[in-house]
Amino acid sequence: MSTAGHSSTEVSDAPWEARQLVLPPPKGRPGGPGRKPMDLRRVINGICYVNTTGCQWRMRPTDIGKGHTISGDFRRWQQAGVWGGVMATLRQWERQSQGRLPEPAACCAESQRIKTATHGEDVGFEGHKKSPGRQRPIVVDTLGRIVAVGVTAANTDERLGLGTLLQPYLASGVTRLRKIWVDGG
Image 1: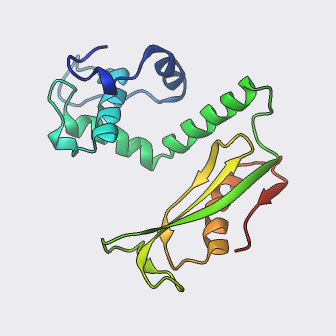
Image 2 (image 1 turned 45 degrees about the vertical axis):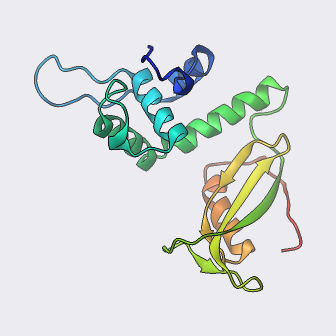
């Protein structure tokens, strides 16, 4: 499905085929008999447009679709954990395409601290730098594919942040992970 003038943010055919296999259908729209759910590809194109341009949902061009409809599907999928499942499935497919098993036996963990001027619940002062910010802990497999990522206050202990990040991943039934490489922290 093409929306004129937005081809740079539209999902091309190959990635679309993969996403179509792992995404739930958009929710049916209320409003009367015969009302159909919005086309899934149009929903994904709308989400990609907002993600790429950084615009607000309500500021999107109207030819992409209704902002509250697309943002509603995005939030519903986010609350249901769909995005994490999509990422896990795509990571597993990529690993298998490279002759690996779907789940890694080893990973690497690191945290990046970033300075921020905004204040919120995830902002803290890192001990030795005395600057406000956030910390982004990340775990990647040996191919560099994201296994888990999060955002915490900068003053969160790296080990605690990593533990909180890995809990849901390990609770999902992972049995193959045996080693995680970390830095001195």
